[in-house]
Length: 330
Image (cartoon, rainbow, N blue to C red; front, side, top):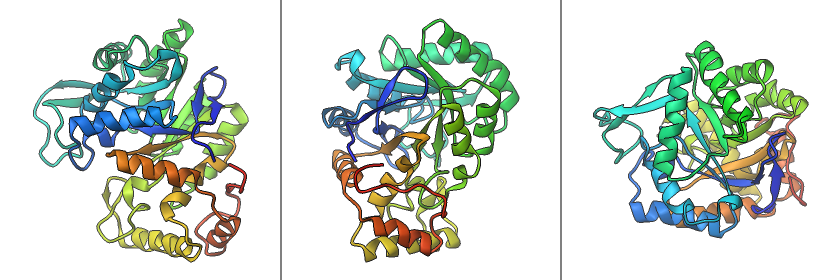
């Protein structure tokens, strides 16, 4: 599996590398990341051949967008694909001391999926990024606001695409039911599925992935470690951004034991598994250090024994219908 391989992003005309960089950790998710380290991660991702970068206003309350843009401004613009998100406007306020993002600026994200707010969001993201354009715009987490997002944000994104301001539009969420509604009811190019097509959770296989394959909608797989538990399966590990329940920890540990039987790091299997599905164009890796980035790249390209996937299915840890990587690639 080669991180540099470029694949078509649905019908958009864009091409993304099979491995992309997710920037939530660079916004201080769970722990602060020094400015120099954050910039080094983005720079080294580019130097190692990653050409797709995903960010959002939410990540570090603008911090991830700013840090990502500071590095990418020095790269040839035609050489990379950049996505960011709409649905939250950053406005003055004191961040919660127990919030997910540490070291975030003193602004707070406010949900707003209206047409006008979407235009403002794009303008503000461009300002933070310091770039002249964004390639992909995603509606971010409209869990309680589908109707507003459908009539407001989506209508705005559709217009921006028709005018050539952006090349691709879609939605990014931690659930599959509403993403399936977007696939059914709109003309999206791609969907970012976070944490719902992983070694731990294959719920996207039931409806969403077959639907996307049928309609030519590209899937971007995020959250492949399920917030961290697949990287370090232990009590207290995060799952969906909260401490994992005991049964989730136990299942993650079973996955790890099967991988250990084949001398395979569970992280390698987690990184490689989603890309085997024909609807999945790209896997995002979120890293908070250059060392973590390099490790994930190596694990993404590590050749894994085919019997590993059979064993995971035998143990009931992978659905029987789940496509699995072959020795020659996804």
